[in-house]
Length: 326
Image 1 (cartoon, one colour):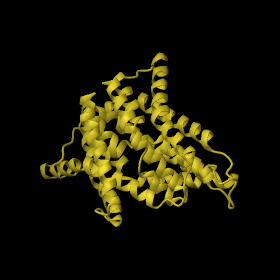
Image 2 (cartoon, one colour):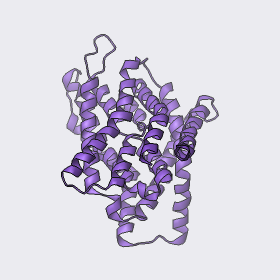
Image 3 (cartoon, helix red, strand yellow):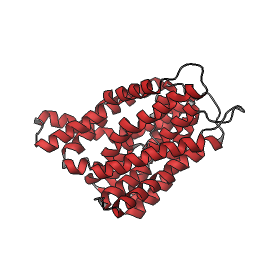
Image 4 (tube, helix red, strand yellow):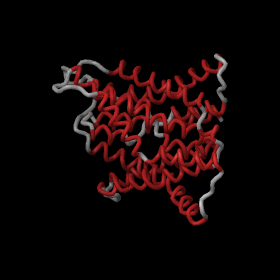
């Protein structure tokens, strides 16, 4: 356990540093979007490219693992929506739009900003392959599905015609403009073809990739603080804590169960790859979903509290699960 905590404590401590820096005003709020842009468009793509280009394609994109994780994401979305969507005449319920965004944070772990570097630090670089696959599923499939459900909110209680298909297409376009899938794909091309970058370019990529982990973790904390500042409502504990627990407990259990069923069905499920999927599912919710909720007019206060609760509790739950797999 001491070896696990030697890795997880610094990771979660950097998240806390980012939160405290924003809270105390050391990091101005106007600087937070700049940090986010640096991580999303520069540092993290370089890190994912380096991991992707350094491992065999079959290790990076395993169809069986991808299928297990995609099915678990689908089930997580519908289970969370079914568990949280209810009439809100009394002001305390959760409408379909907010149930969909709650499902997104329940099914979308912080694999990019936190998961890839954390699991690579715990289990070696080969852990990055399965986790990178989860990033693709969440960016392209899970987000698109949840936004389509959120757009259908108008059809069951809104005041204007619903366009869930248009919402799904909009989400798909957003995923295609996200640099992370393209960085993964480019890394896979280099891995498959044996191409090498010129020395100076490779050094630039390395420098940016090395900056990804500390800046990303610091940014998570700052984004969490900002989300709390822009919350417009007070959210009852019953509306956010159960979703955080679903994220941290039910999601990894579901991934593990589906993996065991697939193995019994005779599918080639690598034990190490499945373990990494389970640990990825046990990560806290993706912090940037709060920005997405704000953009779509959802209850970003509730989403921010789910993310904050899952991030706080994950220090214990994730550390215990990583120790068990170790």
